[in-house]
Image (tube, rainbow, N blue to C red; front, side, top):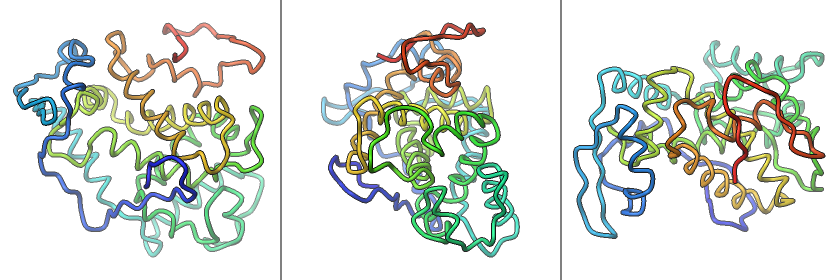
Amino acid sequence: MDDRGGGGSFVAVRRVSQGLDRSNTCQTSSAEVVAGSATWLGRGLSCVCVQGTEDDSCLSFDLTPAQEDCLMRLQNQLDIAYDSSIPEHQELLISLWKASFPEEELHGLISEQWKEMGWQGKDPSTDFRGGGLISLENLLYFARNFPKSFQDLLRKQEGDRSLWEYPFAVAGVNITFMLIQMLDLEAVKPRTLVGATFLKFLSDNESAFNLLYCIAFALMDHQWLAIRASYMDFNAVMKLTRHQLEKELLEENITRLEDLPSYAYLLALLCLMGWVFIELDTDMRMPE
């Protein structure tokens, strides 16, 4: 996926069929070493190496056996490409349609109907090449666990919408791809503070990646409305979304994903005419 602002097409192009590149090449900048450094120390994450110059810094984290196991299971999921010839994959795709349009009968796995969900053509399998099977599982998790928010975004029911909107399903595949990059999930061990912090959440909640996906989707749509974006602004909106998620994940008072300020968007707690909150078992704060 090209994340440069101003581009037109925004289909992710990650290749999942050839396996993941899990080399441990350092990517973290010295700025990331400083930002949020007190946060991961309090989350059971042990940093064993900080070295390098301003332009070449390396973080290496020791993982608990539980964290290593969770990371391996998630990476195994990332390796699975969507295959339209596999019955189980077909069933997942049909389940997504039923969750999205429960009152409309699907007339085939290849059908013009899929464009209603925001796929590029009548065969969704061609769009899954960017995110693999996990991008389908992400969408299905969203539809099943947060049906109101899912339907609001699918049908563009909230906010002052632009004439040229982002296609819902393809945007979802791109969000999966963005999170994989942001969390550095293709590495053997975390190489960023954000990636290491996420692994703590993952070891506490096996659905953490799915949940963060839902939060990211809701946040992306909020950013879209906030800047009155059009189709051509999608890449810029994705960059804003990633930046906000990284910032929130490194806040010291975040002990679970439900504590992220952007979680409020997922629960559709905001009134469009002003700030309205429903009291929950956690302190909700709005992103800056």
